[in-house]
Image (cartoon, rainbow, N blue to C red; front, side, top):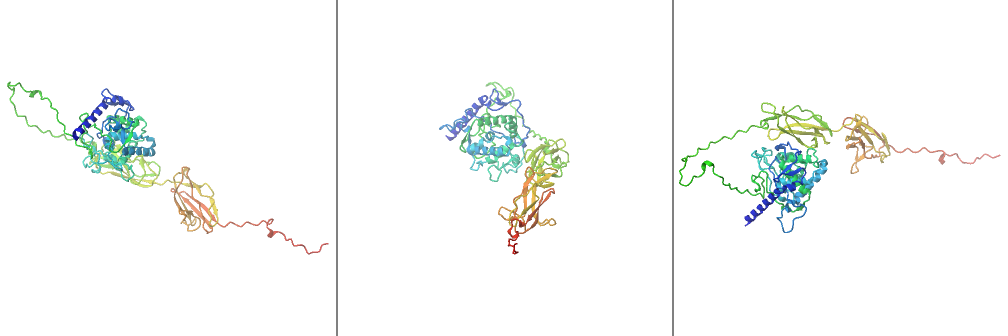
Length: 594
């Protein structure tokens, strides 16, 4: 009985999908630049750009996706009570945790890349097409899918050919890669695009918070403005390079923009159609596996007409030819596949890159060049080289990403985009690898040095005074310049030294205070502002009188000395006209008067 009920539900779902396709011409007009042909298939206008992103560099490896179209009824109302299978109710609703992940990702991208204008509805549209919103919201409290969602292996058999890049860590396949998780990232893309969206310290493609944030950064990686239709189309096509995929995602995007509502986790509808289905309306073909994915029922071959030479003769009529044994079949050897340029790469060579050094905040003057070569040392063109910034650094390539893929030219050379130094100083590594081939990577060492100044000038008095045990009335303020120009974000070290001849830190005299109120005679980590100015904290004096030196220095050799004097105030000189002790004596004269 349960099996029969399940078949009726599946049949109803298929019927709903077919009906949606039949009237797609009505709903397709809701999506920008999307129309429908006479058969209900969506098409895009002629000016829609295409993507040249190879499968190995796309998010999904151009894996299969769900092709169900949005329902025609309004997405705004909540499901009608008593009709749990009402068409469109579960389609319009998005499971609570999944919806929260999309909105959190949008919020983070608004902060990190405001010019991208990523709408959460785009993440919802892609999530719907890639995994049916994590199989209807089958996730735990942390947003991790209950059972992994894994696409078919990308072995070149009807799909792209992407050999294993993760030793099966994410997809359980040590021969080929598979798309993984609710947003269907292939392992090689997740390796650089992965993000920690729920703050648990892990980047897990099976977690909807991590996957949604990674998808947002992936869609915003080329300074695309997703409020612009052309950039939006390019971003979607880079996720999965298919015009049909673009049309389907745009349809769901427009559907969700009109309104949606939150539904409980695990109650969302499951998609029916898949882009790799061989029969329209068939149940999903095997490939996307997980806890709730059943096996596909074996298909029954339909009877076919016999060939003309085997038509039966009338009863009683003689056969025209005596039957003969069929000739034994001959085995046709499988053709040897023609090696691609990537298959011929044996190693990578440095194409002349040396001395990668830049000041914090500057662009590196030199760009990284890598040459792909065969075992014999011949150049290999048309090979994708991935450059990845590694290590504890905030340096990135132009555009703010830490990964870039470039195709080698006829000389076998790929030149990476320009590197931009962050504010974090020190050494890091850029690794070049061949996309789709497990040859050893080639590492380039790069260094970010501190910002420098060649001149420090005081904007206040160069000599400050204070009484013992008191505090200096004025604060030290300086301006840093480099070749006459303002030097911003330059680190300044301030030290109270013993003397001009002995630059060691003094152990007496004026001092600064730390957060606990303790005496500090050396300050580090202070940087000039956008105008090159720096104002130091207040100075205090102990009970030791004397003349002291505050020395300020910067990377680049700039130095400035400020004189500090600690002394008791001099007593004022008395005014004879007002001090009675110095007034003439008023003693009367003893001389007799005349």
